[in-house]
Length: 67
Image (cartoon, rainbow, N blue to C red):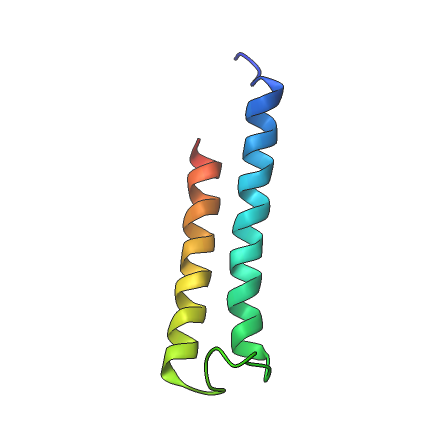
């Protein structure tokens, strides 16, 4: 099997890092009481946005993993 070039490895690493950032951001929104005046604490919109961030993070990680 041919090894990936360095620039593809860097892109994959950056994509995995961003996947972790999205997942971490979603978890932080759920666990944190800070809202930064964006979404009210405990609101459905906040939990929905956090869930979308977590799902998108898993999707990005899955895409990199299968690539």
